[in-house]
Length: 157
Image (tube, rainbow, N blue to C red; front, top):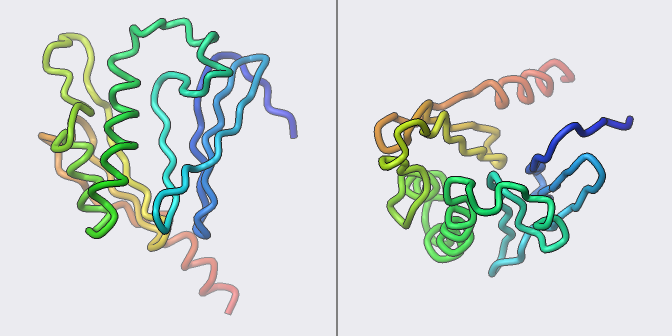
């Protein structure tokens, strides 16, 4: 099925087996970025701007994107260093709260704030979501994905 594209956007796609990609899209061009190999795993991240050299010319915000590349760099640098030997959900919550660098701390932007922050634990089919600034809002556990998949497996038995 062909899906028309009307504006620029990024999609992160991942499955339970660990296959992950980022698709950067414009109305005319799509770029699929593979996950980066790190130690014994893989890492993928997307933000509000294009990261690939191929699509950067189409990023019309020209840096006026609420520190998008800074956030991308904080994720890529710190996931490799901090998550490796620790609980990935806890470390990702710390990352989103800004404990390892700038992520969602828009204190100087009066008309801009984080709407939500989400962590997708595909190994356990769980979603953790902070509805608002993760420094002030608690991450809640969303079991819908788990219940849908496990419910489907139970129904097949």
